[in-house]
Length: 360
Image 1: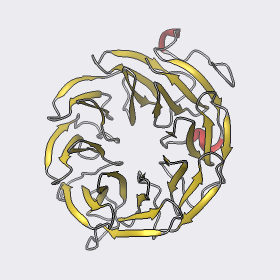
Image 2 (image 1 turned 135 degrees about the vertical axis):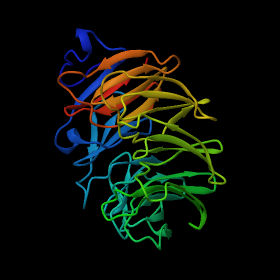
Image 3 (image 1 turned 180 degrees about the horizontal axis):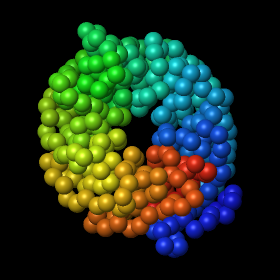
Image 4 (image 1 turned 90 degrees about the horizontal axis):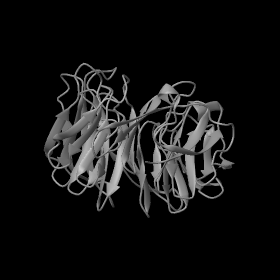
């Protein structure tokens, strides 16, 4: 079912693509220029732009929109237990059904660049001042905060936070120069209850350019992350912080900007070098890599039997074989956002509309 304006030809060669369009809802303003990651709870899909907006998963109908942001546009949302959380100049929680603000908390610095996380008790996020926070999901009161680099000379942004079991894992771009060119990627494991540091891993020594973008993916005993500046995917043991494997992308390009996604024993990812990758989870060995089009990929998702990646067009690859299934949105619409996935459906935003596709 399509809603809103009828969809024009969206694929190369004048044919329909491999994924069925279920609905299309026009968006405008900052929603149409979003580079954020949609989120879904199975009932609604949420995106950021001129505030937060919620759409019905089944029809694409817009349900509510919150007021605009206080300072800057957050790149990520978290949806859990009937609440939508985000962090920018303030951290806040909204009622997922109505968009009503429930609470807000003001951290020491902007928190819009990093991916945040939540569990049943706390909302976790990090700031530009290399500080990690845990605040209560109930009322936004401070549970703990930890300075992740108290002796560092330069402000270094927390790029993502993940929570699993008894630990919170924060990723940081540690800057060794004012402009951040000389940098290292750092993962810090913190006790979930107290914020006490458990261990840290550092990728690089500051003599070159390394870095981590976004939150790590937790899978079993591994944390998977992407070194955007150092052209690599890598995994560390989440209990010890020791590197387990590192897989390099083409050094002629900037590296990946999103951590790999794990399905079974395979880690799937994409990079600016134009390739989509499937890697053995335990060793990092490349099982296949495919270049759907001559364009660098900034975001990826796995849905059904396919890997989707954002090339501004939409690349779709068979996740079992690595065979390219085709491209969509190659002419009049550009894919601007990342992806949300639920129940064999994938959701994303172009510079004109929000879409739901049925995954192949």
